[in-house]
Length: 201
Image (cartoon, rainbow, N blue to C red; front, side, top):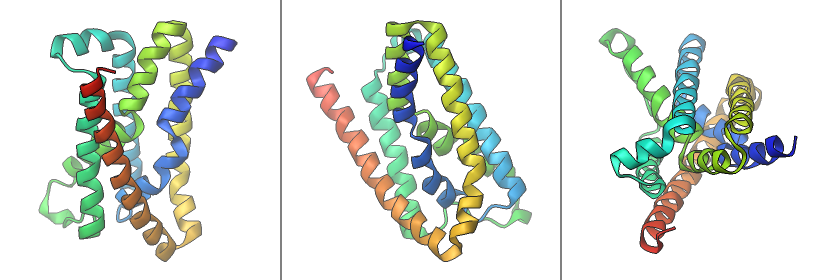
């Protein structure tokens, strides 16, 4: 059991399911129950697809594209920074007239980016997957990945109830604070990526 436990813990910390809750609530604040469910499924499908792809072909993809984890850190950080600024300055990440068309496409894009990647499967999770595969093999890494993604799904499914319990005013305030922290996290990701490029780590 030791390889499974040691493979599970770093990935759990990297994904941080509890930390996704306030950000998820801020992004889905104005969505209906059906829209939120569809977005959650889209995000989970994206996360599962990317995680499995990284597990079995991550090194090959990185070498073919000529990119590194540090490149992902900078790119993911920029995406999160744009999202956090949008939430802080403009209040709503997505407010469109449903009769104007394009609503399903908007939901799908939000489910893929930023929730699926890089919130659920970001640079830290990708690094953990690659390191775990090298250290413990495919089976323990796959098992820890499945368990962590199930925990993320349960967390996202429970998030609306957390928001309902807190109330709209508290949820909105938490969403703003989460956006501020998200901006700080994105800057930290960009800084770590740049430092990694400079130092070669």
